[in-house]
Length: 429
Ligand code: ADP
Ligand code: ZN
Image (tube, rainbow, N blue to C red; front, side, top):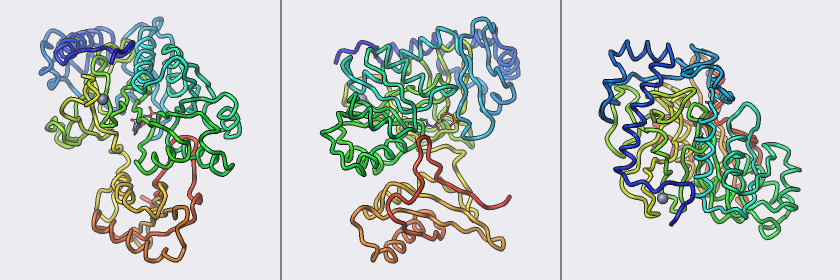
């Protein structure tokens, strides 16, 4: 396969780029930012100490707290006159993060996103309906920049406004949708409600980012909209924005742009790298970023590297889907629980939809977990009691805690244009 935007590096070439990029980044950050200079000095490191990729492990970690403490221009490593834009995170957890970009940073990002459209198999004839947030967020503008640079047609609708989305689906016939999986589900259910069939719209592909989604959720959207492929697209504001990689058509993990950042997976407790293929926290170090470089930045996102070569032939390494954030974890009766684990258990039950909500309460000092799920289309209410019991048993087996399960009608749980909120914690501290 010949690509226009995705470079055909061999593993050795990627390594060489990473070593060079790491040296440059450390020198740049050390000389450009007081924060980094101090942090590196505290760790006893000068830029000359970095000679190989092995030296990465001597570098200090950085965290979201460092970003917040140095608000509003954390990690800034260039004079302010070189900053051409800022973006801010959606602030899902804690205080807003502000990140700065030079023109070169924007160019790098634009190229990363164009690679994503290329890997998804789009071409210049494609029309791309962009249904993610515009403005301060990186999402809308990231997809837009990449789409234009790639040469496809961008339809910059943003999230929300279902009526306009439906009108565009029918009139402008977009072939690709970019959104959260939650927004896609909302749109698909609307298409279904209106009784439209996939032939009346031309969507063939969708890129889902910003939040984890389950295979069930994806399948439902694919079926209703008649999609050929859907792709998981990761990204984060700290690392330019969306498009740090993309699933390829083999759908066996996410190829990430290893010539633009180094990915390490660490054990969040010991802070040591895990062995290849094991799950841990993603830690990223940028190789080209000018305005706000990242040195061993702890993303709090959990995933694993996928060893071996992808059947698609692309040598860019792969990581698994983002399994969740360590911040998502909640403690229930002394047990650490990730919503993703609950989603995995639910995945096996065909009688329920992809949506779920976890409500935590505390009565007389005792924690209580209520899980709401939706009955799938065509499933009778008569089986509710049995089904609830079965789900509760499966969860108990997996999590070792008791969960009360309530089954509600399809479409009764909240839908959202953006990131879904799965856990409602009503316990006081
Ligand atoms: P925040 O949500 O922290 O305010 P961002 O808007 O920058 O910040 O979102 C980045 C975060 O969104 C990532 O760290 C990750 O937790 C989540 N995320 C982004 N893309 C995906 C994806 N494809 N799958 C799962 N989670 C994702
Ligand atoms: Zn591949």
